[in-house]
Image 1 (cartoon, rainbow, N blue to C red):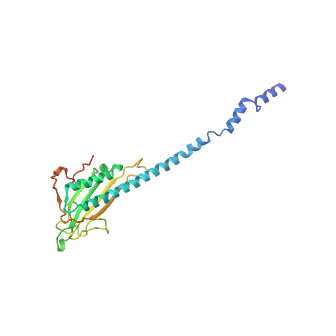
Image 2 (cartoon, rainbow, N blue to C red):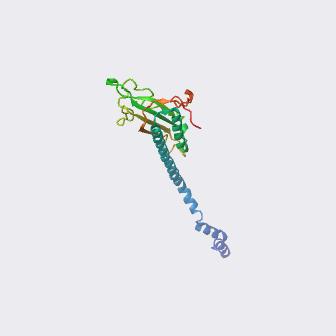
Image 3 (cartoon, helix red, strand yellow):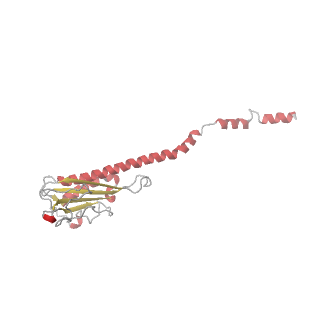
Length: 235
């Protein structure tokens, strides 16, 4: 009995190899950081990706607003008269400005020249003398009217623009009104914010230009003009 007891005590004594292993395993904390990382990684990854997507969305808004202002301003800076060649230069600038957000194939720019229609009485109002468009997005058209609208009637008597913020031109001037619509392309996934459409508008009065009709001194063919029935983009 004494021999059996000593054998058992020896087997489970602190010096026994199995006991030392179990004690070492119990005190081992080398995997603690890995376990903590496994618990926190999904949360940190979600926060990080959300931050990146938010920043990308902010850049998208900034770029689209800049395009709207750029197109309206540049169209209004053309002096004496405006030409189809000027329109190509203006839209080329918009293409370059939005290149970082893949703007051209996913957006639509609508540039409208708004003037007083020259009528009096019940037919007096505003009219869209000409309209030019750019961008490959076929989902959007002008919210406020098309080329020729209001020429002989008062359908645009209050001008164009959002309710309560309509813009009109005086009889001696013209306004270049721009609508830009862009289907936001997420950096990571649309699960963060869903499908987002970014829209901005801008308007500038034409400066130092008395003739607001669209010219074509460069003889650009009808198929190459940036009319609103075209959806080709600059490559």
